[in-house]
Length: 369
Length: 123
Image (cartoon, rainbow over all chains, first blue to last red; front, side):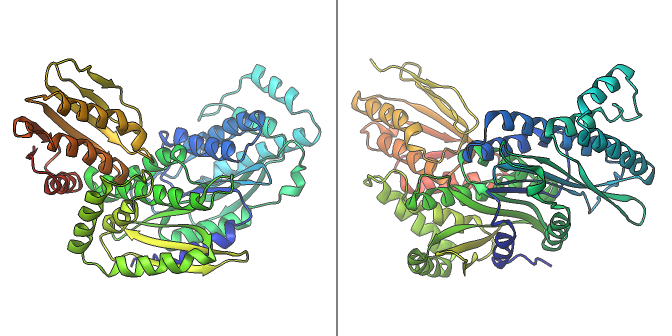
C-alpha cells in the first residue's frame, strides 16, 4: 500500500533541520551512480562555500566509500529488497558520510580487525607510515586491495572510522561513518550518526522512499538527481517513457521550488526538500520548501483552486496561460510551472503546510507518477 | 535570403539547434530543461522573427525532445507563434518527432498544435 503523504516531509524535515545538506540513497548501488553522488556533494560544498581542500578530500572519500560498498557487497540476490543506505550530510561545514551495507560474516571479521588497526594508527598519527608500508607489501585480498582503500579513507579524513557490526539472519549489517571535519572543528564535536542513520534507514524503507535530499535546489544538482530518479523509475516501470514522466515531474517540482523560494532571496542558497519513492509501481515525489507565514494563505488558496480542477480543465488553463505568456514580460514566473507540476501527477496532488520552530512554514506536496 | 544560420551545440540541459534559411532544413533536438529557458530561446525566437520579416518560404523544422520543461514549452511556443504569424506559414512544415509510446511528448505536441494555426505533424 502506498503510504506516502505530505506529512512525511515534515517528519524528515525535523530530523535534517540541523544539516545544511543531507543526502540519503537506499540503493540499488550501481557504479554509474558514483559520479551522480559526487556531483550532488560538490554542489552542496559549493553552495555552502566549503573550502576547496576539504571538497577535494571529500570527493575522494565519497568515491572510495561508495566504491567500497560496490566492491564488498557480498549479498547480491535477485529482487533484493534491502540494498543498504548511502548517505552524507553537511553539518557545521563538516562532511559526514554514513553507510549501511550487508556483508558476509567472514568479511565482517576481517573488516573489524582492519578498522581497528587503521584507527589505532590514526590515533597514534602513524597512518601515513602504515599506508606506505602496506603499499610496499602489496598484499592483495580476493576483492582487490588489502584494505588500502580503508587506510586511505582514514588518512584523508584524519578521523577515526566509526562502525558497528550487527548480526542479521544470514549476513552482517555493516554500519560505517567517515567524518571529514572542517578546518577549525574538532572531529569529536561532530558526533556519531550511526544510530540516527539506522532510524533513517528504517523510516525510508517503511515509507518506500529511495532518495531523500535536502539542501540547495539548483540546476547543478537537478541533473544528477534526475539521473538517479530516472534509473530507479526505469527499474520500477520497465518502460523508459514512464520513467521519463517521473523525471519530468521531478524537473518541474525542483524548478518550481527554486523559482518561488527565490522570491524571498536572502542571498544564501535556495533550500528545498525532496523525497522520491516507489510504491505499487508508481513513483512518488514528496517535495517542498519553507515559506514565509504570510505567503501561506495565497499559496494555499491557489492550490485549493487548482487541485479541484479536472484533468481537462487543467489542460485548458495551461493553454490559456501559454497564450497569455506571449504578451507577458515576466520571463521567469508565468505560473506554468505549478500547473505542470499538478498535471504531471496521475493522482490528485496532496499538500500540506506545517509550522516550524522559526517564523517559517514548511510547505509539502505529494506528486504520484 | 540574407539570414545567417543559427547553430547551437547540445548541452546536458539544452538541445542541439540548427535553424537554416538557406537549406530550409532546421531542427531542435535533445533535452530542453533550463530553469529559465528565455536566455536559451531568445536567439531562436529572434531568428524565427527575422525569418518571417524576410518573407522566408518553405521552412521545415523538426522538433524532437527527450525532455521539454514548462519554461522551454513556453518559449518554444513563442518561436512557433512567430512563424505562425507569417503570410507564408502555410508553406512551413513543423514535424514533432516522438516515439509512439511517449505519451507525454505526444501530448505536448498536440497542445502546441491547439495553440497554432499552422499544422504540426506528429510523427
